[in-house]
Structure formats: structure tokens, C-alpha cells
Amino acid sequence: MPGIDECLLETMRLPGARGAALVDWTSGLALGTVGEPPGGDHETAAAEAAELARLAAEQRAFGPEDGAEPADPPVEDVILSNRDSYHVLRFVPTSFDSSVFLYLWLARSDGNLALARIRLGEMAERLVLG
Image 1: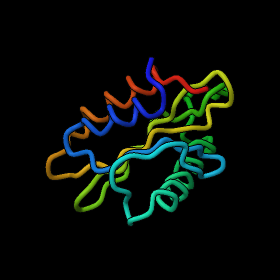
Image 2: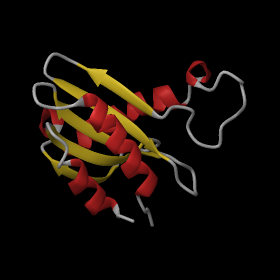
Image 3: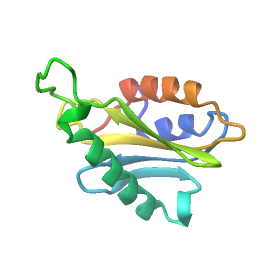
Image 4: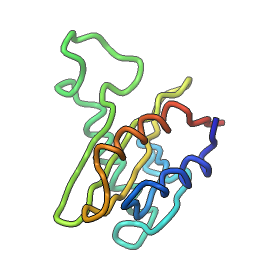
């Protein structure tokens, strides 16, 4: 089971990966980073991505249809796209408060969004935090 550094390095092997981070969405702090940061600063990118993650995770409209309160964030991932890239946020289930997500910055020209989403999900399941 990979730790943070191994998981982030594996993320960078995805086609089109430009940068990645593991972020705590309650504080906006990056717990680990690799590659180049969007906008030139890993900490700023982590804080801005955390705002988006927090917005998605805390809204009931994005939760399960049965209305049950989930133990983890009700959202699996968030995908934001622009003209040249995708920003993929994948929530990581944990034994504690599940307040972290994997953040992948993916080049649109040579990245594969479907593959990235599948692999991030697999990595999130295997990631060992501690």
C-alpha cells in the first residue's frame, strides 16, 4: 500500500500529468506535491482547489439521492476543465475524517480524463495515510 510520495509519483506517470498534490480540504494545506503547480505555486493551487472541494463536499444537493448522511464526503470526485487542461479532485476515504483529496493537473492535449479518473480512484483506495 503506497504512502503519499509513492502515490503522487504514480499519479505523475499518467499520460498528460503536469502536477499533483494531496490536499487537506478543511485547511487548504498541501500534504505532498509533485510536478509543476498550476499558476506557479503549489500552496496557492492547493488552497484554491480546497475551496472547490469544500464547496462540493459540503453541499447536500451533491449527496446521495436517498438523503442519508454519508460518513465520507458525498462526492467521489470533481472535474474542472478549461481550454488546455483538466483539474481532477478525487476524495480519499480514510479511517478518520476523510478530509483529504488527490489533486491532478492534467494537460488536455495528451491526457486521458477517463483513465485519470479511474486510476485516481484506485490510488485513493490504496493510499495509506499515517
